[in-house]
Amino acid sequence: MTRILIFWLVWLSAGLANAAVLEGVGHANVRENNLDQARAEARQAAMRDLALQYQARVSTRDTLENGQLTHSHTELSSMAQVSNATIVDEYRRGNLLRVIVRAELSGSSASGGESCQAGESSGLRKRVAVTGFPIVMPEQGGDPGLDDAGEKLPQALLARLQAQGQLQVLGATSLQLFSSLPDAPTSQVNIAGNHLTNVVQLARELGAQFVVSGVIRDMGVADPDAWGSSILNRMQRSVGLLDTTRRFEAEVMVFDGFSGSPVFRKRFETAANWDPKGSGTAGFASAGFEQSEWGKAVSGVISEMAIAVNGALRCQPFMARITRVTEGKVTLASGATAGLRPGDQLSIYRSQHYFDSLNGTPELSDAGVSITLDNVHPDFSTGRLAMSGGQVNVQRDDLAIIW
Image (cartoon, rainbow, N blue to C red; front, side, top):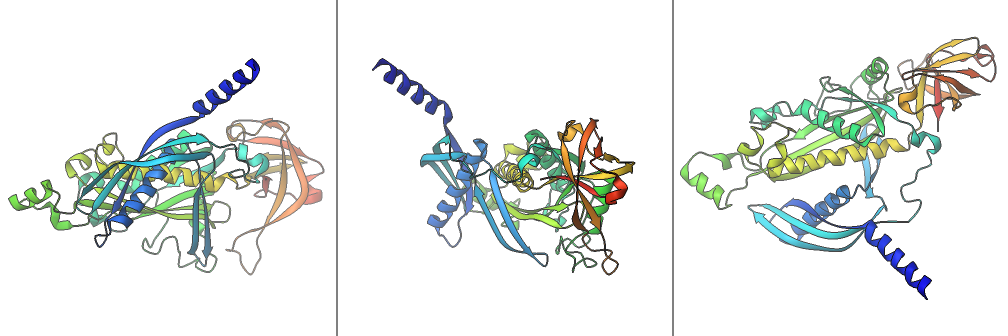
């Protein structure tokens, strides 16, 4: 009886240790005075905030056809179980509704929900370059603190990706990939191939396997006349009669650096009360940015971006470019910083272009041979082929892959 009692006490304490009571904040716009719909949207946003606080992961699957997003599905992993979720506070100001949800979150023992079939590659750190997020309509900023959002947003995204520690992140936030922002990422030259040659060039120069970019599509205020300097305007703002919300919408894209093809694309959006004194003077994504409701909402969206990018790349294979082949000795443009170790085996794939589509996506074919690493340095590694490189025609720019 004593052993049974001890067992139940240990089980109960373990369950309590894995559970946490957290509060999440969500915002939504009240459209056509439909408060119930706004409350449901705000509650859903608050639940996402709860999941992010509990370090739950977001799995996103997008389907692209001819450069257009035809289907997008996003789901939270089963790593967190939510129970006893209740709205503990609700506040409406103009057309903006804010709710606070309190819930109990605990770890889930369910298997297979988030595990992918990437095998060994899931433990390696793929190299990712983050470029600028140009603003489609710069005139929407209307505040000096928002003029540099195109560089500050990717810098904040880069910092979050680095903090997660699952990717090697390179910064190129001053570079802009797209010539036509409203149509991005479509390129007139490569509209049929659905890839960007400048992505391939940038990835080669930086030694990146993937390139993360994006576009800020909307930063407009709901009512441009709400910030008049008249006494009537100030009185109406103080009692919440004017809509002082500002929107934020950005699109994140991830491209394969070897082919330029998109592997992930998703839009993120939010809206919250805008206070120029609280946001503009601090600067976009600065230390004081989250002192305003809008800054806090945008910061949460950037965190969602980082989790989504990480989730999109988690199950992608790890690829390293072959830089040299001499008498069966192969040098790879990746090393210890990516997680490679002596004794690791990588499969060799030939990269081939055809004369009728020299600018098309290269075709990879299994060379039927692997390389075993014997020397691993921080940024490169070397190994031996099981047979002579000439026998299988392994060349520079072929790829070594771990699935």
